[in-house]
Length: 294
Image 1: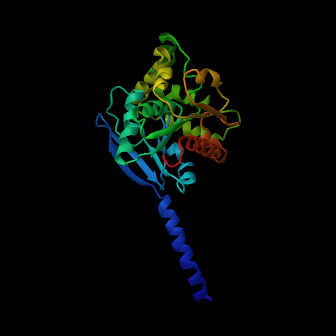
Image 2: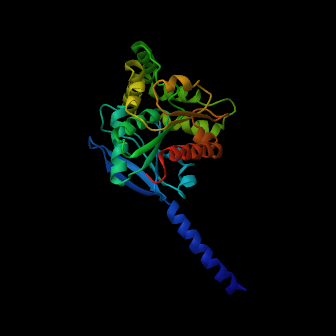
Image 3: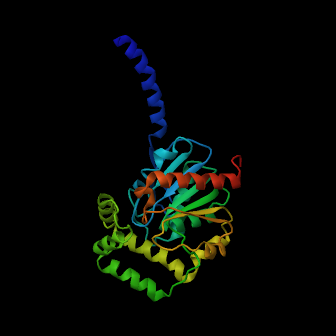
């Protein structure tokens, strides 16, 4: 009987080992244009690469529920932008264009020729800039709880007033900011982790990124970038903040909106199964428009 069990077990272990090998991430570092060292992870294989870009004061760990879910069908890349996570933090001006250079450095190092970029929050601005930078490689972008109204404009004083509390007391201002990003009844363990994690980010890089991200809504760059982005753009947004799809379509040539209900600003962490289903739908929509054989 033991011999029979052993004969049955060996092939199963071999199969499990093969599957696990494909899902196990490979870690590496790419060098961005300004010599920042960009830490990234790669799992899975596929003609299309899904490149996940985190939001402000976050890192690649925020995609922990997406990497294994998509690595069977795609090459899945997640990275830490400069000044975040395990990447270096020597950049003085953390602009959205400089973060796009980080994405480009990873894509170039991995020799990716066909990519869909997925960006959360501030990452939505980054993937728009990256798509403008790499029109021959990026076939679509998916923004997660971002791009609510790219044409919205604010006076400079609005931005200055918003940044001031973070400059005065970064840790507590970030804790309070994050607490308001979750709906009532959210998992308190998740809320605590995100609150404490984001409030532990390096202050200098975080303030620089925050200012440059918000500045797009003063100078109009949030909308202007889409003058050069002629690929499908999809949002998967919560209802915490209103999204204005018709306003977006005045600036974005091909825009779709999917709502995810019952979550706050971090749907990929709060409701990963529902979120993954919507993300897969968004990816299929982009691939159908762009052609799988391109």
